[in-house]
Length: 307
Image (cartoon, rainbow, N blue to C red):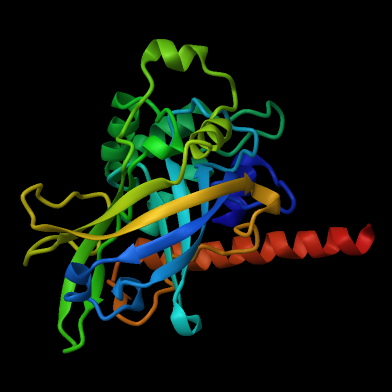
């Protein structure tokens, strides 16, 4: 997977292979009692929990345009009392584009640049889309919803199904999303055409000058029959939901000098009280992230030694 990403976007030493372009942020999270009734995780104990975050644009191009119709991401590291960590990695589309790791891999193989032309073969991408119908829902979402105006106006979705475990060992299937207190706002076609190449970092910095930015964590409760191993399929809209907590971000900093730079936002890193399901994409992301993390830190170490 990492080789495929490098084939599509080039090798950018010291940077992540995917969601390469990013912005660091810090803040805190406070969980609710309603969530604590479903999960014994310290995340919901009501404490003020330190959070290190990172916003990003999907893909492996560090100079990608902020106007691209691609997923926006957020990675969060929650630093619980006692040293436990909880990671969440989310995107702004309610669904993912791959049901299986093969779809994930085949997309970036299809985007590989020809060594002679320096461009991807449109025929390969068309073939990928035809051979992998599981990508259709996210593709439609991105084509019919303009990019967000600011990270502060972006909803982020966990996309996978997780299990909350309570103090009695009772398990509840859940999905979560983080909804912006500032409200969701997308750019109009006219605004999109006028936006500079890079605007998201500055928009977030300017918004922070007005005060902290908040998102409410909304947890959807699954019912029997709801898919737990396919992040491309949405659950029915009438499922019961609770507010599980509030994320507050208070400052931001450039990616490579932020506290997020050295963090591998592994979605499988969970504190007691939250567990994964048998979603093959979830475990695949974990192993792929680990290799990306190892490569870039090795590159940084090598450069430092050379310098």
